[in-house]
Length: 183
Image (spheres, helix red, strand yellow):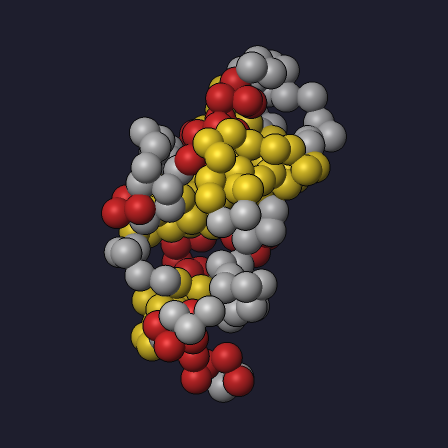
C-alpha cells in the first residue's frame, strides 16, 4: 500500500519480507545463546521500540523488557557523555542484559550507555542491533548480534526517523537529500 511518505524515499534498502527474515535470524541466534535464561531486553527509546517488538516476538525463550531514554546532545553537538532522561526500572545486578538497538551509527551514545550499565554489575551485557553503520563509527564499539549493514546514507523507516517522521514506514529506505538538505 502506498502512503504519502513514499514520495520522499529515494530507494528501499530492506523491504518488509527482508526485515522479517532478519528478525527471525536475530531471534534464533539469541534464543540459542540464552536458552534456559531470562534475559532483560533494554530498548533505548524512541527508535528501537519497533525493533524490540518484532525481535522479542521472534524469541523462543523467556525474557523481560525495560526502557531507557538517554541524550548525548547539547543542541546539535554530542557532548560525549549521556544524560538519563528515563532510567531502567529493573535492577540489572547479576542479570543477563541485552541492549536492543535500531542502528549503531557513531556509537558515542551507546558506548557511554554500556559503560554506565557495566557499573550496575550485570551478569552479562550484550548488544543486538537491527542495523550497523560502520562508516559513521566514532567510538570503539560493536554489536554482538547484527541484523544488517548500511552505508553512509540517510535512512528512515522501521523506527528510524527524520525530525520524528517516517518511523512508521514498514521498510528501511534512503531519504531523498532534497527532504533534509534545506533544513
